[in-house]
Length: 270
Image (cartoon, rainbow, N blue to C red; front, side):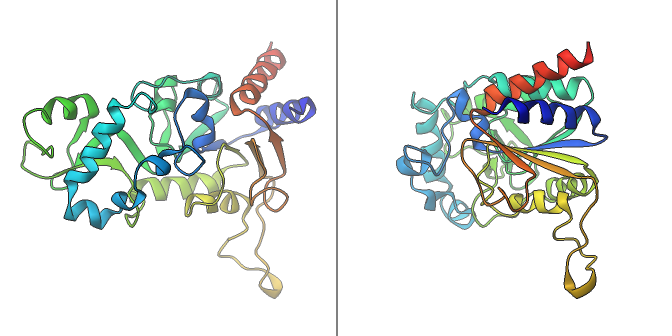
């Protein structure tokens, strides 16, 4: 852990006018939530092909069977997981007014559990189900009760309930897409935490923050860069953003690094 970069990030956050955050699975693995793609992850235990939108529409039973199995599997702590020190640090930074918006690719509800209020759920939330007919939402505990009597679960209107996470082949919710893009354009600092930066369109948000895909093209078709926008990565490993988009990478545990940054800010504000 590079302490000089932690101090630099704390200074950037204090000096920022509109700091935002983009988080991925790396911040939640420290709460025991497995990610999808890594060795031992969800896709090694469950067939990812089940989670294509068209396949769900054709056979919702198999998806609900898998989710109920996950819920009863002690290896998957998604439903009972609790925020770690990284989530708590981000909640503190929002509470004191430094972080304006938090965009998450995670579907685990941990940022909300930690106390963050302005959260954009880019890929939805697996702790809820949504009716494909009327849009009503149900918490997973209600769904678990319902499946004891009717399977697969349905809405009170009779419509099919689908886990409220974005499946393969399903569009990002329009509201989340619009809000995320707007915030990336507005920000003067983006923290990119625990994401591989390989899943689109979320991977393009840091480029938007930097102005690298701005529709206003300068001379020789070179994009017009935004001025005064820093992108800081916090991750265990370098990503495609490292050295190309981000200003610098703080390598290590997201929870430990964010906790250190929050402590530095507390000290500087005393």
